Image 1 (cartoon, rainbow, N blue to C red):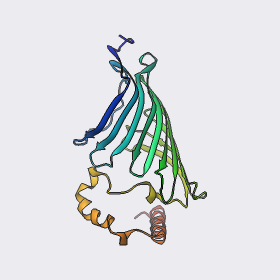
Image 2 (image 1 turned 90 degrees about the horizontal axis):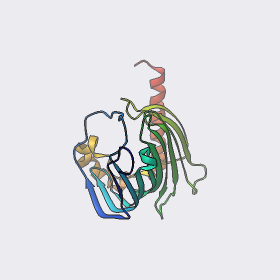
Image 3 (image 1 turned 180 degrees about the vertical axis):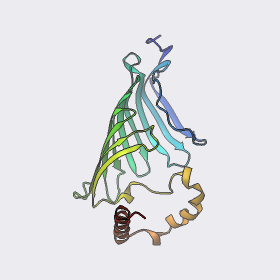
Image 4 (image 1 turned 90 degrees about the vertical axis):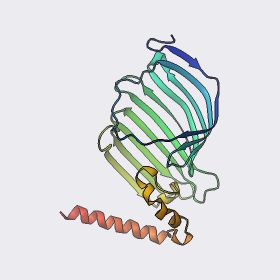
Length: 232
């Protein structure tokens, strides 16, 4: 036994997979805070690589590289010392440590960059710290090609609450969020509308111009002002 509570210890020098698929209906049960994150196995995985991970209704994750240790420090924590992958228009890398016992302190960091050759390159960073039940998040997005374009945000997230986002403060200037994703919206709530959306997304005549984006932003701001000033 590698530690108290762990029945087996396993070290895998390398793990390789060309393709992994995960599918099935999403659970309707609300998330619940676990009693413990301790595992009956201690696993050291210094070098895992997966060519493509397919999640139902989502763009695949490709070029996945992972280095992790489950049950580190005699089972007291789990560590992901490296996680890197390509997703949609971004190259992402990060690391995280989470305690095995309540309140499950988490320290996670991630960085994402646009793929090489992007028309408008960008870089983003995210940190998440605190007990798992109430996390403090900080995010920033910018671009070397547009020094004035940026987004900064701080949020408090309660993952197991009915409304997880309990606080948000954000500042954005001259940043086009359309460059951060592509394709159809996620499957769980949008599949029925895909036949309507697909031909419109493929129609080059419907690509929004900067003036269209500005109009939509201003119209949404008008709606927010109406909501704040009216009881209707």
